[in-house]
Length: 339
Image 1 (cartoon, rainbow, N blue to C red):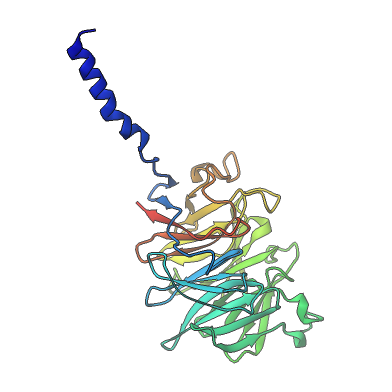
Image 2: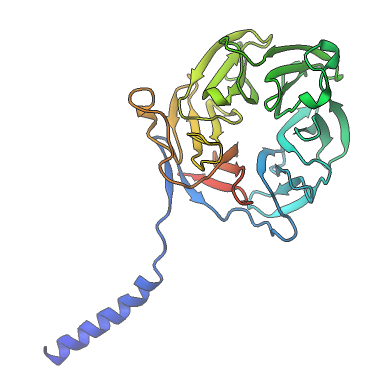
């Protein structure tokens, strides 16, 4: 080899070697069609020493853009983040079963509704954690013999102010209370009828049809989303084989939800996220299989383990999706940045 050729070879290799050594890992992109996302595992800047978590259950955003998250670690049941993932505040040391978290604006004042399946109650709280109101099992209705049969997992608020409580770890009723806390009626419950529920884990009010709002309930163990009118009359079901649905979350015309697992056992670490359009047709499965193949040849399944056990989603104004997880070694929320 001539000296000039040898020199050029050494120089070229020397210049490229550091680039190879410090090359960035390829970005992880998940999702389908118009709903595709870049995975950001490091969005949350919480310090586990000062702000530890156990299960990260649910998230809600107030009108100023602060993100509230519930965890069943009683050193801080509620963590409050800014949009960049920095912890602004934390409170709550008395809710060992902190689970469902709903934020509702009532005549200009925002409140949180926190379910606690360990304490068998739902708590209406100020954004600073002050207790405003409690909801317990409606023993007078004859549905429960004692309060510890009541294990609520989620709430939603109807347009008239009535409070819906999903007894998702109890008897699977959807219980309706007036704003004054008085029990009014119920629907759902365990059973084999089309209107019955099996692990009524999440509930939401669907206002996408302005003149015909509906109540959506996840019958999680059935892999089905069930639809009811505002009086609790059954309207129909959206079967999603392979999707153990958590809470339905609406943003614009789209319906989002975390899928805890796609196959048993409950700790199979096989979850993902689903997105449905206004007609409740599946359009994207971030972390999961192609939605076009659902029902035709297979159930939904996990394709890449970005998540273990997704438990809830929050969608911001830019349509980025924040995902919390259950039973995932205390991992903080992940952000999916829409692309």
